[in-house]
Image (cartoon, one colour):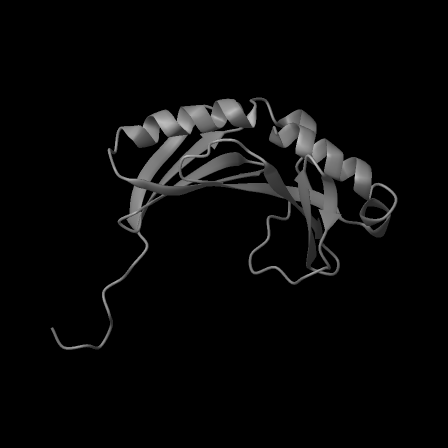
Length: 158
């Protein structure tokens, strides 16, 4: 499933509820387990600026399911619209995957997110590293970096 279609489906299903209450979509997320590069389900997040609450919509071939409102840690406060998505999520994923493959690291899973500014592909490796690839909304690579998911223990003798 493409993100643009998931976003449209979530908007359609929320029109008479969340839309009337002041929520707007601000981001999307899809988790791909290793070996499965097919987006079966997207999480579309709706944000309410006055209440600082988010509602997540799980969008799949089976429809749209909404979670209860929750308080976000650090929400994107800008609306994302289908017209802003200038490249398909599958093309963005393929571009990011080609950049990741250059690292030759063993893959565990992929988390693809999108907001009103950019796509973010996070490739989590079996060695607990994450290769982060940022792409603009048209799918052009902006940056790429590798970070460790683990840290040295603090305060323990070496």
